[in-house]
Length: 112
Image (cartoon, rainbow, N blue to C red; front, side):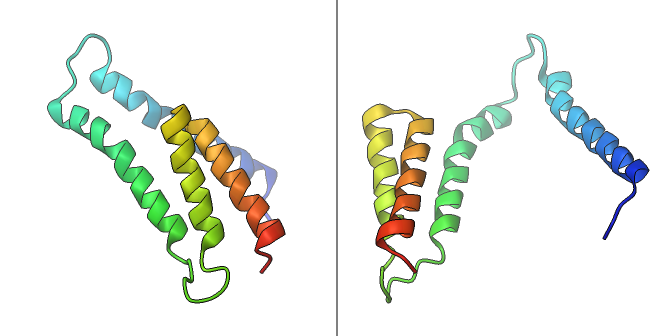
C-alpha cells in the first residue's frame, strides 16, 4: 500500500493535534493549585504496580515449562530484575540488566 505525500502530512498533523490535546487535557482539568480528586490520587497509586504486573504476566505467558530450556532464560532475567531493583532501587538499571541478561541467554546459552 502506498500513500501520497499530502495524505502523509495530513496524517501527521492529525496525530500531532490529537497527541497535543490528550496531553493538555489533564493540565486543563487539574492544573493550577486545584486539589486532585481522591479517585485520581488512588489511580496514581495503584496503576503503576498493576500495569507492571500485567506486563510481567504478558511477557511470561508463552513460557513452555515442559520442554528445554524450561523458561530458564525468562526466569533468570526476572530474578535479576527483582534483585537489581531490591539492591539498587533503580528502575532503568533493573530493566537494562534484565533485558541484557535475557538477550545474552537466548543468543548464547539457550539457542532455539
